[in-house]
Image 1 (tube, rainbow, N blue to C red):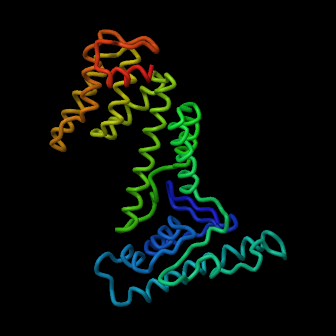
Image 2 (cartoon, one colour):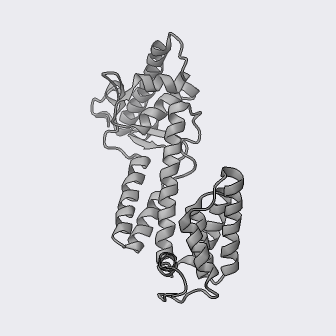
Image 3 (spheres, one colour):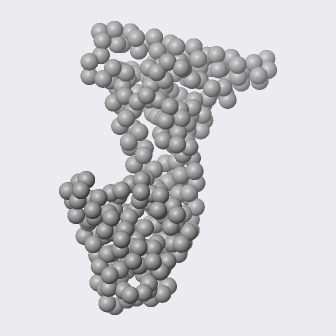
Length: 287
């Protein structure tokens, strides 16, 4: 079974798509796919489908949706077996072996297939470890591969309920974290000019994200655009005060002060003794 959740939902059994058209069975499949090979409790599925006020028939209706999904899985298994010849590709596997009833819930068995979210987490984890080991080229490559698995917003074509909304928010946060770390790796490699276009779009989309704004300031500073870097700080501060009632973080204020105290961008690898040590190191390490 191959599963895609980092974009439109996609579930394929033996290469054959399993995709209910009705919204509620799609929700059930999406939640099961997100937790492939793990038990999804009935309570979570019921909450996803009906919120805090499920009907008395909720469990019976859920069982109906499970049966509908098994019918689709069974049809996919038959189609896959038919295309593989008389011996079949399913090897005697039934729909109940793929969508399993477990104590307290249901399990969608991956059968060793590909899951884009599992692969994303694997590559991102390797990228973070490379960052910790100061292998910035390796980190940039691994995190770029991880991010390439995304084809849009997570579960873009599923009408999410409470549980799926939380999962989508979690996935989007992991995506943003990987993106920030990939940009950080590229900055460490001196790719500041190549990042300007991407960061222009990102700070417009995430108007109060301090880390991305700090990276944009650094990229501009290192590209000889000191005034624009300071303008980015001012726009961020205005947005933070207006929207959240907050001032920029101490780290970002130190970065702004470091840029204010330098008339020209520091050459590659040089140290500017006029700025405080923390901000000076932050500026120098991305040169």
